[in-house]
Length: 555
Image (cartoon, rainbow, N blue to C red; front, side, top):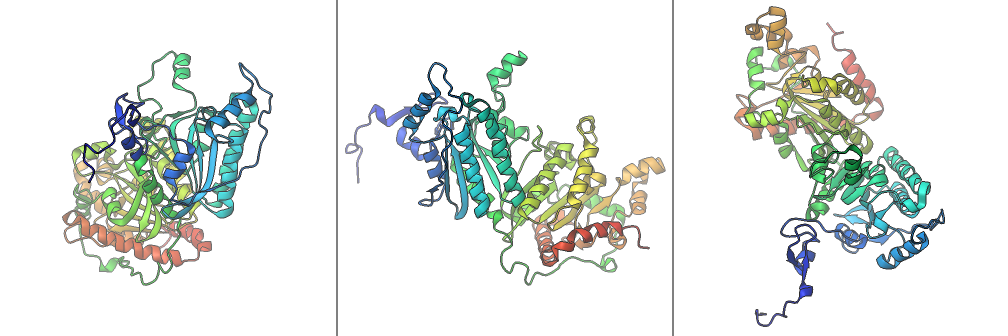
């Protein structure tokens, strides 16, 4: 065993100064921690080679050849000829361009990985870099591999003028082809990512994840402050700021990136062989077999704060769940939870209203009442599900859409309408379960499905019983009478064809045994999805439209 006296003496070369906190840290530990300061968590810049080595499975990286491009299309010179600057960058980095593209695997899943290197002329986007991104996208398309791009850039390269500007369109066009082909794209944002890169392919990933503290934006902080003559918040354009404003899906420390990407890639595997075989339908579809219960009693049970929330159900239903956040327009609504994961091995997309249990949680999640941003976040998920061919599961538990002035000013009605149209045209199986309250258009905006189920103590209505009583009876105390008249309880809804079946609950309600309630929900959803996956996809949209068309026409 080596003793302290036998260890080699520590030298100045064994230490380095953190670029974040300025403290000295032991170099070997810093390297072992993937270039992250153990004190303050600062994420140091990485070379493209280092990043590739960290992300791809060992010994799987294979360089992607990229054709040569014009190296100085303008014959540009400032204090130094551009050719000379580019030559120095190539010598200093050992790279021929600022992007390194590779084939490889992450967690065993084949991918194409393109990594930008800030050392090469500030990671700026020139013709050569645009070509590398496009070639990577073309290989991803041809080989049907997910494309992962790690960004680090100051923007489009000034020395190439409009030639550089055009790379924004060229790379975005390549991403459009991947969208049409159903190929997953992921952006890993590192510090910094600005200008033409942020305003093109960096923002076009299906999933955008950022390292802690990474900055991304179109214009830089200094430019903005000088233009508007205002001081910006200290965290402006940081990953954390972007997450809070719905512009990225997650912020993940470097040590977690490989596992995060592996969970994402797992949903690209398609339906496992034999998944639909032997699945039992546990849903009650005959209203005559439902126990009698007063409608108002069901309303009270649907509102029990001990009932499992969508987050509780997700923890039980889905393995490897990856939450997707934000509407990409400046907001992340806490009343809607969306993400992707594996349901007993089946890749699915899930969206649901998120309430909470405690008063603090309920307030934080707006009591499950979605803003326009919540519906737009769900729309992002639905579009991704359609692109990747993922079945969609939605869980409904809301008193209704958020009624605030800001919601109206930012397009509440339009957001709901857009979701109704979008869900009606999704060409993947869609299953909805009303697990608690199903209130008005706020519920329906996530419930245009092939099959709509309701939990045994759920409710579904155009308005709350209290609201109906106040308007028509002019007495809120008439809510029990209104609940019965509105037919909000499962038996009435099933007889009317509003729902297609009832999911059983533990005796006394889901709040009495939340885990058992989640198990019952899981059994029901698996059985229904197994049937939907065996249905002819060519007639799915027709049947979905017919399902809603016949409501109210049968007597």
